[in-house]
Each structure stands twice: as C-alpha cells, then as structure tokens.
Image 1 (tube, rainbow, N blue to C red):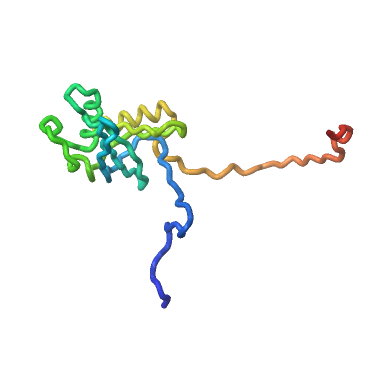
Image 2 (cartoon, rainbow, N blue to C red):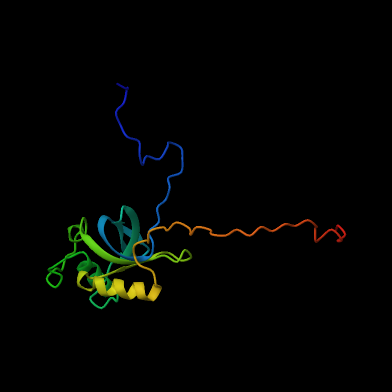
Length: 170
C-alpha cells in the first residue's frame, strides 16, 4: 500500500499557469454563485458571478436609483431569468433573490470587446437560443471533433532541377 490514496486528475501542477477554459458564445442555463456590491463614483453596481458548464463568468448591473431609471428593465430580466416569482410584489431586493438561483443567459464573446451577458427569461429561452443559433449559424454546444478524411491518392512530384538556380544572390 502506498503512502497516499488520491487521484490527481484535473489538478493543475503547483507553479504552473492554470488552463483557462473559455465559454463559447451561445445561450446557456447557469447559476448565480456570487454577488458583490461595487461603488464607482456615484454609481453602485452589483457584480454577478455566474457558473455555466463549470466555467465562471462575470457581469454587473447598475443599481436603479428611481422607478424611471432605464436599468430597471435589465433588473426585471435578471429577476425573471433567476426564477423570482413575486417580481411585482418585491420592493426591497436582497441577495437571496438571486444567489444560488438557476439563471438563463445569452453570452457573446467576439474576442475583441468585453463579453456580453444578456439575461433571458426561462419562458423565452428556447426561442432566443434558436434565434441566436440562426443568426450566428453556430449551435450553442460545441460540435464533436471529426477525424480528418483519409487521403486516398498521393501524387509523387520529382524535382530534379532547381528552378531558381539562375538567380543572383542579393
């Protein structure tokens, strides 16, 4: 019997950079795993940490300051995305309304700008996902990698003379 019984599969070696998994643009079901309040000048933001397919992504929403603040539409989408049923009755929003809740999002990362996270209501998820996949012509889930086709014929080329032999060197 050895001195340690443990499987090291999936463990990043000490001192080595961790392999960063990237989420492919698409529509996903995830979970809110973190909330943090952030103050930037006179604006307050709630930073959300979402976990989708084991990958953590981040987004934020500015806290609404009035009933006419345009950001309230995004908060409504966020609340419905997280399954908050009593949206119309709540007047004091707390972490418990979002934390550890299943959510539905559209994630887009063009590799140039900051990734975009849009909250999707559960009842619209399939429609939005279908529209996204048609627009981008890519399914949300990565396709299975196919093996290259077998080469059936190889043509032999025999060069016996250097075509550049008559050129002068620079």
